Length: 463
Image 1 (cartoon, rainbow, N blue to C red):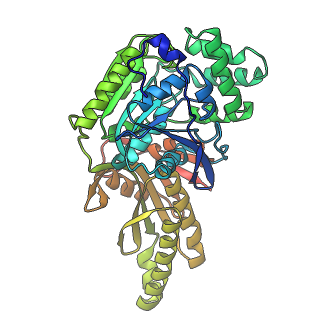
Image 2 (cartoon, rainbow, N blue to C red; image 1 turned 60 degrees about the vertical axis):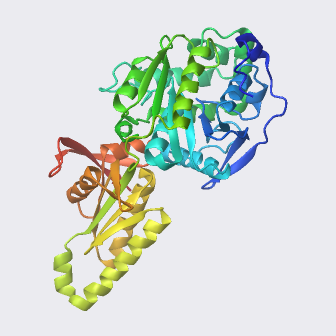
Image 3 (cartoon, rainbow, N blue to C red; image 1 turned 90 degrees about the horizontal axis):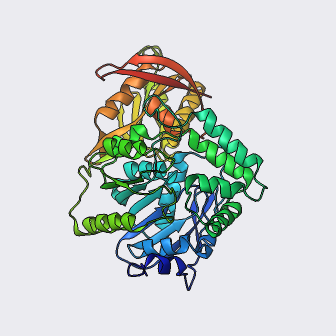
């Protein structure tokens, strides 16, 4: 099924005889459309860029052979990202975290305990966050023509300024109904597309997203930054980047430099879409990498580490409160406090790690859920006559006897110590990872955290 023995022109004409069945995985309250192709021993999840339509792609004479060739490498799992194609639209609080959960839901529905993720363009940050958070479910990671963030920052100055990208998005939306707007947009990224190619890709875009859905999806991506996540990726990683595409090749080099043990390969070509232009060099790298993974030659360096969000709570003035109430009344109040915290941890999928006196230490596999949990805890305390301070940080944690540990945990505790009564305080890493959540933050300035190197910019969650 891979088409590996076909010449490029023959492969371009090859079409699928039987279109895979479209099924739905439920992720929270959202339904995600997905398909499974083939039955090879290793699972491969394809995460495309922007608009995608699991059924129409098989009618695209350029994309269908690409999917077939991927299916020759592994049992192929494809899905329409939330907000595109046949999947449900995005809500106002859609984040990279909720979209990461969509991958997990699709893998569960496809009965895939572990898969190799192959991601293109804006699918890259999604795959990177998943690989860092769920290394036990990620066999390896392939990043094609992608970047850690979509707009310029002091650390990544070669990206386009935000205002320029917003203007480009608004222009596409304004001209949505014009016959050539999508063709022009596609040509900008992949100049070697033929007129037939542009018509085929444009059709998928039009059927996959409405103008408003496109605007919301693209603007959400402008807030995403996974730079802080990269050092936490511990799975084998291959970074492929075509040298002459509009997305600067320095993005690929940056990813490889910051993901431990990653391999960077600069490929020839000027087309962002991997289906356009010479695919042989790209597939040669994919096939070699897949062979290494399957043979066990390339293993994750640190399988006992995971990206996690840690939460710390502390009752304000607990000693004075205990003294004024007496031992028995304080113990009863503390039990009520513990019951509220544990109910909220259960509600938001938090894992209680430790309880010391009047404080809780918990971990989450997503920062947005951790923030919502922290806010719910803080808002519940006044009914008991208590105030708590809460701190959150996301970072790479060691797994020791099933519990998270390490410098990220100490950082979370130090962030909590800086919080004011009733306040939920987060690190900049947490704030960056919840773009699109609708959460508001107030900057609390730079802080030194006891025992933690450097200065830390902290933010209070607005409620």
